[in-house]
Length: 154
Image (cartoon, rainbow, N blue to C red; front, side):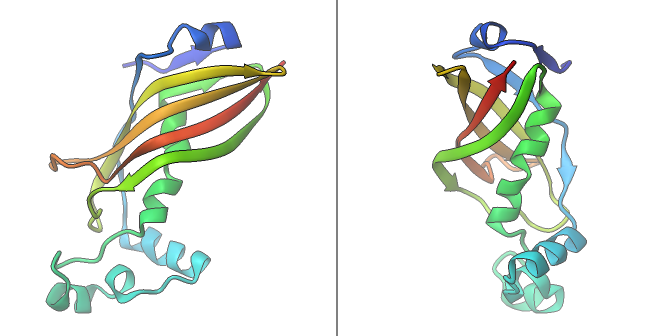
């Protein structure tokens, strides 16, 4: 599927209620997890100690931080949609987010996105995107929720 190109509020409005697409898969590595642990000061062994995880974790592997998986959403979203003519894009919020399944180290994840709603607020487009982070070879998603971006179209 090719990337959707959006140049205006009116063009984005045409996609309300529609699935916009699916991103490519990205592999979550132990190195990424360790860097995220350092950046957030969250060094729980379940994330950063493969030897201990192999023997003591119910997953027999380290797992990505939930917030690491969440932080990948804008990157993966940009693989699906390119929004032009926006002088600024703001991560505005997240609604009804649930972490549903752990992401084991070296798993591949991707997002499936649907434009849930779009509201014009004094020249700003508030886009609510229903997002599912899928794990390759797993029927359950890693997370599901609605991410909200503000697009300041020119």
